[in-house]
Image (cartoon, rainbow, N blue to C red; front, side):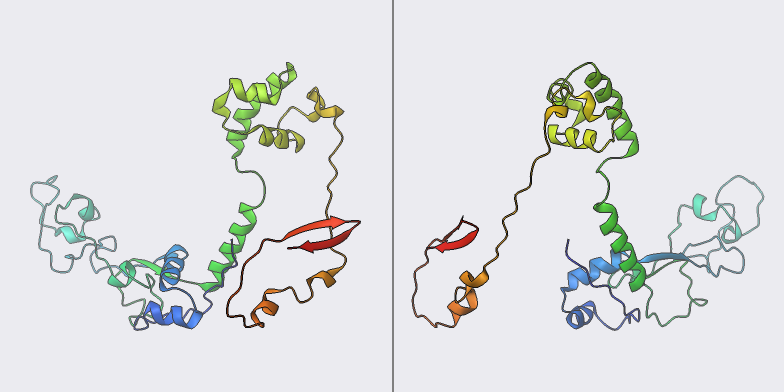
Length: 258
């Protein structure tokens, strides 16, 4: 996952199109739109009407309906002032804002004051909060295992008793395909101590020695002199032929052949 630059500028203006913001950040407009829509913060603020602060119908100011629910025979109170108006009225239509249904999907830069806006559900974008949430996602996605505690406990109840009986991980996965995991993953989970069974419970695991990691390091970088792509471009060749090259090591020395 590549590092994502946060949108630190919170002064979103409605008259500024997403393409202008994308051009300023050198990003695609779709990327900016998806970023704002995915990391906008929800906020609840409702000024309310004179009669009822729980009425979010678009017709609430001019509605003259009475007894829409039909529960009371002689009810002279307007339904707009009733708490159950939105749930019982068939002509209920929730008030929506066009700024939230299309880019930039947030209330940042809106000309209306918050106490003059009649939309109860508002959305804002905070660049620092979005960046903090993104970094938390990077850490959580790379730590631990891709399994919940409940799933791990269910698999442990099947795997650990069978290992104590002497069965191998390969035999367990062959007889129980519902575990949905590979043999290598089971060995890794046992080695990390995530299951009740341990490495000592495996018949052959305790006999193996840990594998040695052989890392080949290039000590002499002089072989790359005049062999980079920039050197090739500086030749200004009108025509050329591509040839395969291979790398091999002899006595800890890097050799390039073509």
